[in-house]
Amino acid sequence: MRSNMNLLIGIGILIGIVLLWFLLTYWLNPHVEAPDGKARITGSCGDTMEISLKFRDDRVAEAAYWTNGCAYSLNCVCAAADLAKGKTPDEILEIDPELIRDSVGGLPADQMHCARLSVETLYAALEDYMKKTKTQGKRPPPGGPDAVF
Image 1 (cartoon, rainbow, N blue to C red):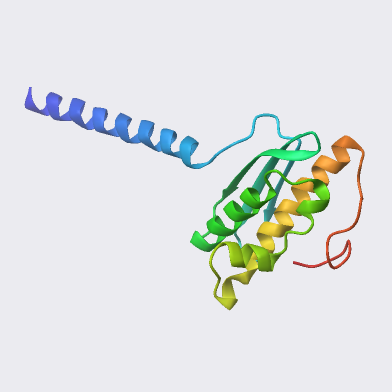
Image 2: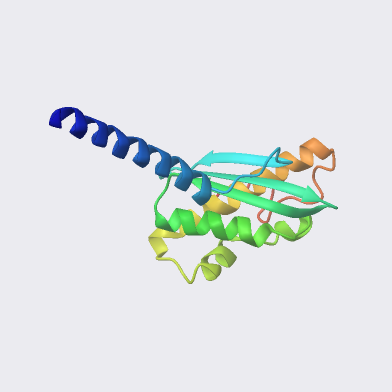
């Protein structure tokens, strides 16, 4: 009798943990339904970042992000998505790694690749939007179309 009760309690706790994990994952990882532009890039460090953009009247109305990287990656991709909100495509192209670094309160030199990867991912999401709306190529990203991040 006692072992059955312990088993039921254990199963209840396990179910509770799984439900909490799903809720926190959904809550902590904002998403955009039917994004107009989306990109997912894995950097040379192994971190993957994803940014989704939803446009209204040629401005970013919603932006969501995801990463499997470290805290620096999370802060940088979050900053990139937040900085994109309310901006036009041309204004998004003014977002650079230094602006990301400054908006997260600074980064160690060996973590600047996180800022570069977040900008690369943001630009790729913008490029996806531009291709879908056939307004591609108002101007290339800073450093030219073949800029290496």
